[in-house]
Amino acid sequence: MRRLLSQRSRSGIKPQQHRRSDAADLQRDSQTVRFEPEAIPPVPSLPRKNVGVFVASTEHPGMRLATALLNDGSYNVTFIVPEPFDIPAPPAARLVKIRADLPRIQLTHAVVGQQTLIAAPGFANRENEQRVIDAAHAAGVKEILVVECGIESSRVSHKCESVQVRSMRTAVKHFQSPGFPGLNWGIVAFGLPSVLDPKVPIEIYSTRHCGCSSSTRISPRHLRILPPHPPQSGQL
Image 1 (cartoon, rainbow, N blue to C red):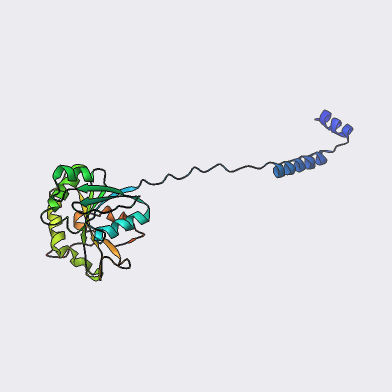
Image 2 (cartoon, rainbow, N blue to C red; image 1 turned 180 degrees about the horizontal axis):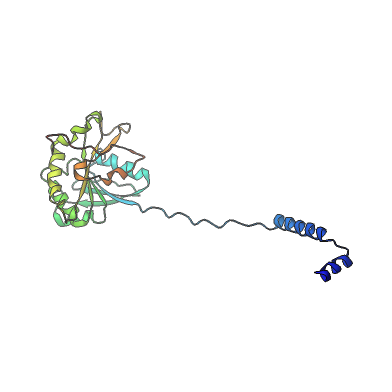
């Protein structure tokens, strides 16, 4: 220790001055050395949802719904068009044509790869809905939405009273038994006065009786989502 102090005294540097010099060096280094933050990896985008929509004409309610989904940009939309209709699908959409009698094999191939199937009016009726349900299940579709037009928003609890929805619930029921991969279902309602009026909201409605539907995740920027509602007494 005495030798170190004698060396500093011979050099003319006092211990206190040496500490000040070190502090100045650190301050100078901190001004010249810049630490760049680590690059944050981009957040992976969620996969686009595949939605198949039955469309019969350019004036068909399914056309308006399919267009809204396309405009949202978050969905891969497939137009399923029966004969003899000829609809020019937008470039961003996929077009699949099927026979008017909805043959089982052709219908199943038409809906393969779809996560959600929207059965607009004219398809999910008493004659064809079971074919649509069976084809959807065979193709691995997990959600079916049936379109009901002209239902007032204030009567949400009565939407299950419609014949089409009542029949749809019956058709889906045998795919909802325990231990059997089930289908989910919901309702699309366009409200009044016109299903073709862009200002009329499109609503998604699901019943708690069949479980909470993933239809609540369909295009929230374009559709007004209604919360699940338990069926009323006396309803299906």
